[in-house]
Amino acid sequence: MEQSYVAFFDILGFKDLVSNNSHENLVEIYNTVFYETLNMNEPIMKMIYKAIPLLGTKDLETIQTYIISDSIIFIQPVSKKGLLYLLAMSRIFSSSCIAEGVPLRGGISVGNVTVLNEGYGTTVIGDGLVKAHEIEGNQSWAGIVVDEECFKILNDDPETAGMVKALCENYSAPLIKKYNAVTKKGIIESYVVDWTKYDLIKSEDDVLNSFSQHNKSIDNPRVKEIISNSLEFYKYAKGLNK
Image 1 (cartoon, rainbow, N blue to C red):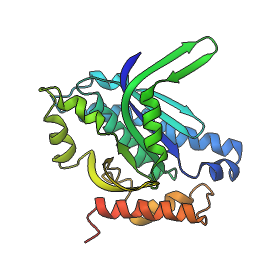
Image 2: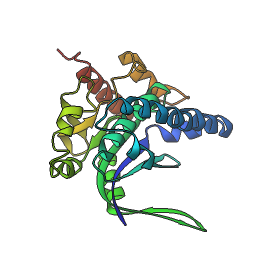
Image 3: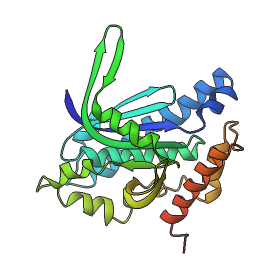
């Protein structure tokens, strides 16, 4: 058992992604959108964080990734820098996925997680995973909400108490923003990952098109609601709601 930060992502439009593409095309989408993105992200992350002496790259290598059908899981053991790495990886990953036509929604939490690698397969269990999954499942937009329990751990350590504010709130390209997230339970003010900061997503059309790429339908009222809510976040993050 190990205390870990957990990011749980769900692929939006997954049913259409599977139903409206050949199996060969589906495998190619996964290889391109997920695995190539992850392979490219790691050296980028190391390059960025190597330039910040306070951070370094040691903890980055401990992130574990699991992809099962429409679920993607990142696990990062709790450390002084672990949450920042997980947030940064989540931002790059979600932005890349939207740009490649596979929008995600997600939740990030902290708790007990155990990974059992036995002869019959791999099992991931723990309340950290459950909490992240619950946060993800409550979202009504392509957004990633961060459980404030994650920040309490950093704030309890004098060495990292100011790191969150410096790098996540006041940094010129913040990893997170305070936002009135639209959920199934109503609007809830939350810390959310800001996936708009990269040039991969240049306009509202890029966000909109992400939901219809790879032969996905956007005619369903629920899908239209999620698209609308996602566009509202893009406009908010880009300062276009004035």
